[in-house]
Amino acid sequence: MPNPYRGEVTFTIDGEDYTVRPTFQIIAEIESQYGGIMPLAKRIASGDFTITEIVGVILIALKGQKGAPKPQELQELIFEEGATNFLVPISTFLANALTSGNAAPKAGGNSGGKAAGKPGGNAKPAKEEAA
Image (cartoon, rainbow, N blue to C red; front, top):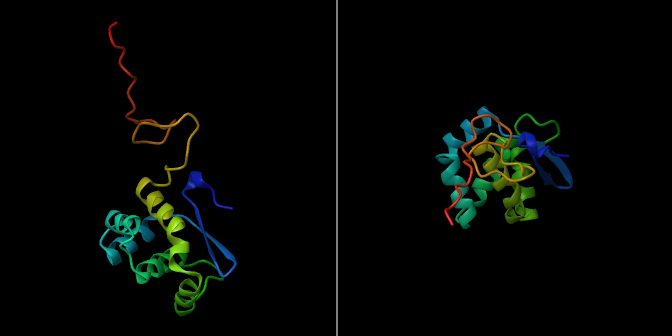
């Protein structure tokens, strides 16, 4: 089971769960292959993605995972299962990569740029208006 507070995401492929989390190495490889995390995330969010990008991100994320499908097998499995079935976990994975896994929901919300409870958050108290 993925731990959202560590930025973990689970990809279910052919009935098997593979839990991954963004690392610097994974992020750097995705950036070098697809021109950056943010442009890729925007393309996926807007529906302007290719199956090659979907497969590529999952391949990079699964590198080193014990028992993960081989690249050719993974391509076929994703095609058979439908690339759109992987959009939510990929979007979550990319969001976690951009936020270092700090995108997990926190009790009470967070209006700052840092995770709630961490030093350096930029949330400011609301100003009271004169009556």
